[in-house]
Image (cartoon, rainbow, N blue to C red; front, side):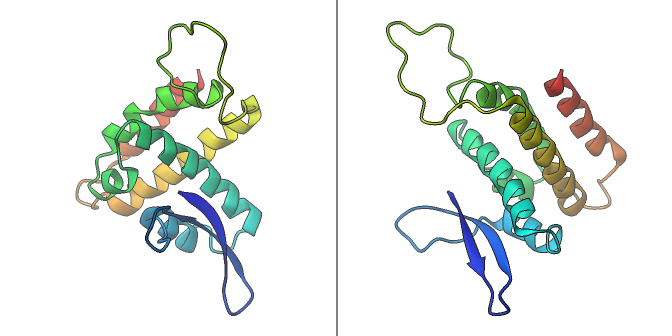
Length: 161
């Protein structure tokens, strides 16, 4: 998946998170809706920052064999929240596996440089906003209550500690 820029006929620029592969690049559904509804009147760079944070989480979830869009649309937020501790460690370790105990020999070059702790915190903050928006949008009102949002708050507080 990659982040691209789309320009409307009006001249407005919009960042899009698109799937990569042999087929034509299609936007990732839930992040596309999020940008169109929640971030519509935000600056391009702000929306792009949100999508970079979402992209990093989707990349991590793919390594754990979880399709975030499917989990969101199925209202399976427990599976998403279970990934957050490992995701924070993954970000901190320069996007290496989060379950390494030791490495023998020389360290391989990292595909991604380590990120600054402030950037990591921004990624977590933006991801929290995204997941909170998803809960309020996709959980039916009959099932929606404050405990879903409280669970997100609690999990992010644990990750922050």
